[in-house]
Length: 52
Image 1 (cartoon, rainbow, N blue to C red):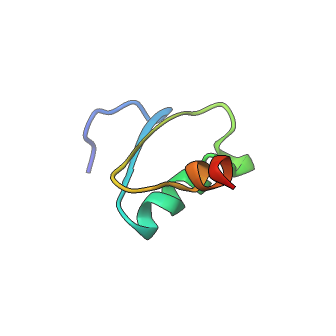
Image 2 (cartoon, rainbow, N blue to C red):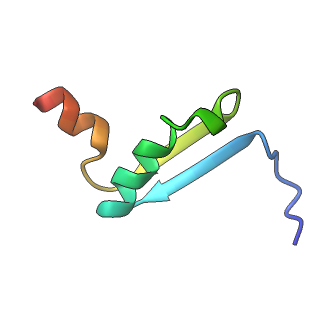
């Protein structure tokens, strides 16, 4: 199905462990050059790194 979206602008959404996984996706080499917007509804991976 085609939603007429921009395949280079991706939005990820996650809660709980999904928020952690969404945060980790930006670290993958395969997403270089893509604009990724992350919306999390819980503490994500990067917040844990900053606190520790």
